[in-house]
Amino acid sequence: MAGLAAASTLASRGIKVILLEAAGQLGGRARSVAIEFNSQVVQLDNGQHIMLGAYHETLKLLEQVGINAHDAFMRIPLSLEIQNLAQRDGNKTVFKLNIPSYLPAPLNQLFGFLSCQGLSWRERIAVVRFMLHLKNSEYQLAIDSPLADFLQQNQQSSNVVKLLWEPLCLAALNTPINLASSKIFLNVLKDTFSSKQNSDFLLPKQDLSQLFSQPIESYLKKHGAKIVLNQRVKSIKTDKNGYVVYTKEAQFKASHVIVAISPVRLRNVITELPKLEFAAQQTDRYDYQPIYTIYLQYERDITLPKPMLGMVGGVSQWVFDRGILCGQSGLMAVIISAEGKHQQYTQDTLALRVAQELRDAFPQLIKPLWHKVIAEKRATFSCDVNLPRPANLTSYAGLYLAGDYTYADYPATIEGAVRSGLACAELVCNT
Ligand SMILES: Cc1cc2nc3c(=O)[nH]c(=O)nc-3n(C[C@H](O)[C@H](O)[C@H](O)COP(=O)(O)OP(=O)(O)OC[C@H]3O[C@@H](n4cnc5c(N)ncnc54)[C@H](O)[C@@H]3O)c2cc1C
Image (cartoon, rainbow, N blue to C red; front, side):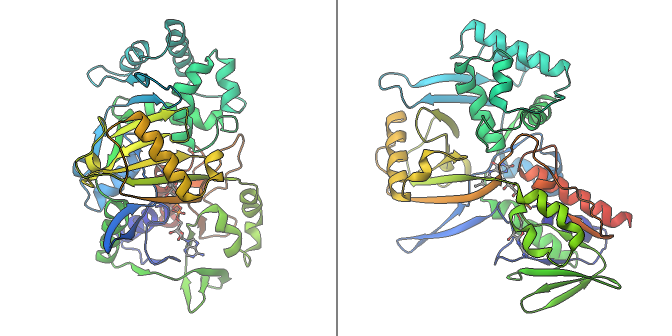
């Protein structure tokens, strides 16, 4: 997304762009994959993505390339409904939060948190006081610390952490709450709660390639950009006119280069650029967190009461009804963010376990017809406390780093990636 955002901006300004992509398709981590079942091809995402109303630059980019956000997303005011899988009998819904759309911010949050179900009055008041305290301090922290500690210091009970903050932390930072950076979490809260629309969930109504890479690819081609797939960059060298970028088969000369790859790949391509050693050392320190998406196909008439529901007390965290969202009737996508015991299971065992959890929580989900587990082992960098974040600007004139990891205010997100790409495009234009 960083590379695509940079390329679209530059191409729209009449700058000649060559986009080199190692894979056979564009989109990086936000792409769809075709899976064959019984000679039928099903288009799945490499992981169910959600966006927020606060993703302003991503929405602008999509508009630029001709995607109408109204058609592309189901926009729903922030609401969380959590089932407790560990609860054996009766109603498993243990938490409900609705931020009403008819009230202005911050009244909508006040009302939402005070009226949420599943927390005691004392806990609800503690949440509201905490939110007011964050607002008054402009969501700033002098010293970063693990989110679990920060929440405890701010009188958030273990029940509030389990039902509200931990699910939000995992969804937003893909990092266990005992490691997650409080500073970055507060940045996300700040942007999410700064206006009513910002906190809306935007759930894609199309697969990720239809949403992002396909319209961007058409836009780039229309604006004269050259896209070369299956071209893994091996190295980049300086040259009297700028840079030479080497792949296995070819070399490309360019006055400017934007390196828009994930941090895990950075060191491989910068071997001939010693002044980037510091950035490489920074990213060498990164840990990575997985995201598992377990797709379960049920009979086509099976649906959930809502497109997105949360779960605690088992391995499953969120379930999305792809029938409601994108017309893939009966297809459920279960998300498990960050590291955990689920990584010990084989994919089939994990799918069976998740299917059992779904059946316990939603009796209509009796038996899936098929399943597919997509395990992105290094889905995102672990958004840990005080994580060093390389800048877009480097010591090489005309060479920039883009990617979610360079957008220091955010965890690994589409919006962070897009913003980093736009920043690099601006740097190119300014020179
Ligand atoms: C399963 C999953 C679920 C997620 N859910 C969400 C979500 O709900 N909301 C959200 O905002 N974010 C989510 N994210 C994170 C989001 O997808 C990423 O933060 C974002 O896509 C990163 O974009 P990027 O451009 O920084 O990097 P990437 O997507 O990693 O792009 C880098 C590109 O560089 C290419 N490349 C690598 N090496 C080379 C080379 N040597 N030569 C040429 N090309 C190369 C890669 O093939 C890739 O296309 C999720 C990620 C995953 C994996």
